[in-house]
Image 1 (cartoon, rainbow, N blue to C red):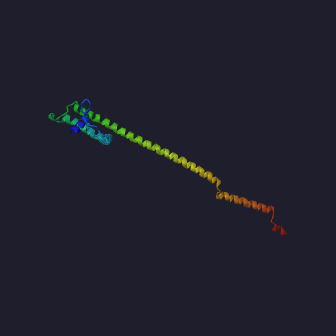
Image 2 (cartoon, rainbow, N blue to C red):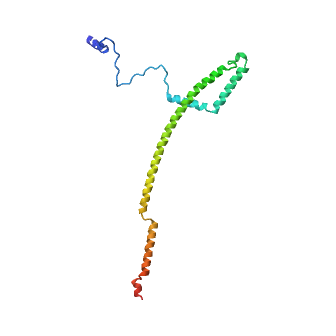
Image 3 (cartoon, one colour):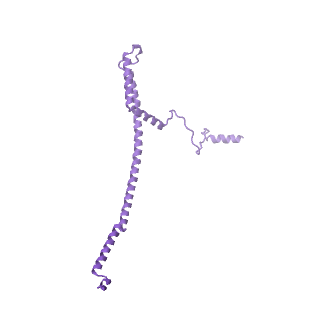
Length: 187
């Protein structure tokens, strides 16, 4: 039993007597690390930013923002002095508008970047589809040309009719030049 303890102690300590950390198994994934920053889903955040950017680009947002600013200014001018929270230079209003702009600009840029990525993928798919369409069109053009060449060698109804008419004319001409023997015997 003492030998087992010595073997365990020897395997966890080096020649210098320092304790080594236990070996990790390579056939199993590592335990997740603790992170100081909260984790977030970039796709969900992107969708959220697109919704905000869509709202910021509407007339409804401009109307609401204008109404809020008008009410804010009117309240801080005409309300009783003890109920006013932002005096004439409206520094708090300026701070709020700057804060709104500082958050809106990056969210709009993020939404634009996501739209650019989608447009790039769509453009690539359209380009590949156009290449396939061009290849199909060239193939069909070659096939039609081959069919036309093949039809040039095939006897058509009109060609056969014209050939038969030519043969009938030739026979009629021979009959006129060389009367038949039955016609000579009757004379």
